[in-house]
Image (cartoon, rainbow, N blue to C red):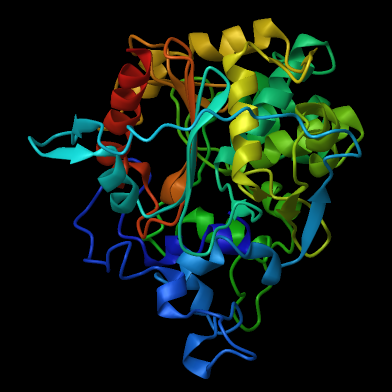
Length: 433
């Protein structure tokens, strides 16, 4: 989410929880950004220029280029990998995975793994099995050395960091948010706990229905300069100013409700408790220790606040390293990066009764814990999920991790789950044979 992480959102006809009838879009091949010639040339022809200022970055299929080139469009801050050695990802590539078949969710249609990549507008995908790269592909504008917007996968990084800080005593999960950020005293967060932020069980007046121009999501992204502000705009000027305007609706702790603003509030809490910016906390707590091969980067608002709700950009293999570390109970690159009990708590999942109230039709048996999505399937799979197809999918039983970047024209995962979740599970079972 950053200015570009919400790009497709303006064109969406889906809410986070369910799908409406969506317009027809050109398929993955027809919308390939290289084939279409976006931003090619010195300078590119006028009809091939993508510009945030003119709204070009808000439209599909231009987003198929934009998601792999966020830094060219917005202000950013670095997430340093440090100066240490790159951790090795052994390779054992296989040629028999493209033909793995599965049944598309909700239909009798059969689809192959290779076909699912196109169906989901995949920009890049890495599959690890037992810690080895068995499959790696890139499409369109994303290259192995490139970086891509992670969108709400970002939340899982900070849910993990928040849980780590609870485990080591730097955060009290039962304390009110205002213990760390007094500025939120007179807001909806004033009587919310850190745990309610982590599990998104806050009661907030905040809608993420992108089809509704009056939804609070639009006020949020205007505050962070994620979308252009109208003439005479006099609303909040930063992400943190917006947090101070959020009103309460309902009671905290009663139901799961996915609202990006919770992650920004958690980011502010982490910043206060750690004494580091959001990007610095990620760098020192996880990124350097993973032995990442690339720096990451964050898009920032006009005063430099990183967008903890979805502003992270990374290389794809580094995303896979993070997933592999979570599969290995927090241990990676020769060290225990995340305490094993923190990973175990995530895998256990959250309150399923609270989760079902959100009405997710494709994942009704799942739950949400520390900003991770937990499947409760027979393999114990859990995932980090972001709009337009960003994903880390961890299958402990199959010893498999999938990291995917994508630029699907529809934001909500409800549009991708039918051709993603059964594909992931089929691949896991195939690799177990």
